Image (cartoon, rainbow over the protein chains, first blue to last red):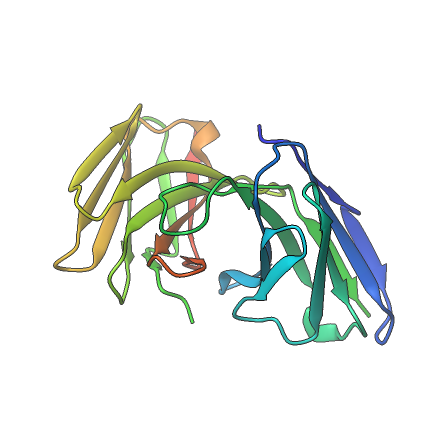
Length: 115
Length: 110
């Protein structure tokens, strides 16, 4: 299994609070991704990174920010959590970007509940 | 919006039977990938088929791709209880992301 660790694995918090999720990889892969998974929607890309300090928005980026100060760490921050952000969040990594035929490797997810 | 759409949404089969699920997509692709997700876990990459390929095998998995119909199928032969999972297709259109469908949930009964 690819070395991807997500923390925390579970979190319950209140509306309006900031939340930061961490993804740590030991594979030295250049690309990292944050997805959310909701019933009936599959996985939707929030943000991705193509190198240290290089990030870009995905299809559902509103209300989320990311940072990547080291190759191995990719942080997802909910600035002011809302109940619509209750979801399961997955981090993924890949050696090369899309179009190259490289698969993505996923962490085991963070289950986030916002009350 | 989702690029890939799986069909059926759910499938229940007896151990030893074959399971077939389909994926349709809307735009041209570079490749199509299938992933498996066990309950409470992340997605695991199963197989990738490029746009110039029509069929690919990996163990008990067989994937077909018909680019003229914009569809793909995943066949799992001789299913086992351990195949119980959700299966997702993901399309790579050469832009910045993979587009995932909502998945097919497969239950293999003993």
